[in-house]
Length: 93
Image (cartoon, rainbow, N blue to C red):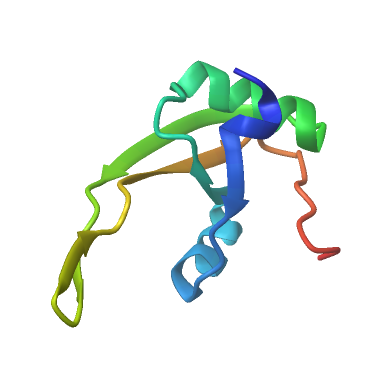
């Protein structure tokens, strides 16, 4: 799988901003990507060393729009821990 397909977008919330103090960055990733692929993609894209990758899968929620019922897509989140002394610059921080 291509490194640009593995990582879809960073997740920026209040909680994930607090995780940056622990050298952790949170990404929305492809649901088929495994931990090894996520680690390689972050290493190559951001030129940094990854210590650990934790993942979680989330099932899509049912949604309605009037009489039409549907479902949001399922998705996967990866919490990437950067090695001590390494930096990961997102959005020019």
